[in-house]
Image 1 (tube, rainbow, N blue to C red):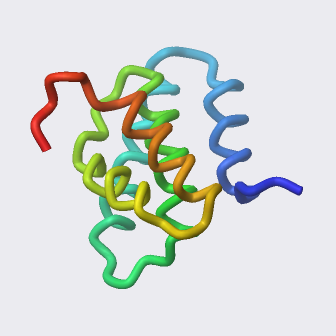
Image 2: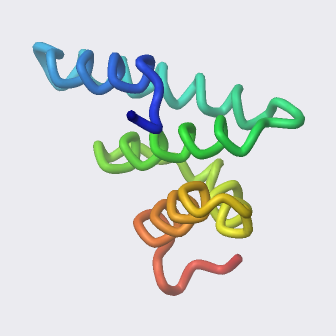
Length: 102
């Protein structure tokens, strides 16, 4: 089974089916807004953080800034669950530059 929600796959599908760069950007800007709100919530489960970081990687891959959540990637590397730990390291390695100060 998949480790990601149907909502994530709907996001990927919507971006893939967008008819213009402007439509794609609108979808991504909405996703960034959603992620910012989600990361401000208290007591997020590691599962929600993991999926949100996968979404963050997708946002950054499409050229948008998601630096507001880098700290969550670092924190997830300390998770006990191997899949969550992998996502934390993957996100950190893809988004943080070698000279980034943390």
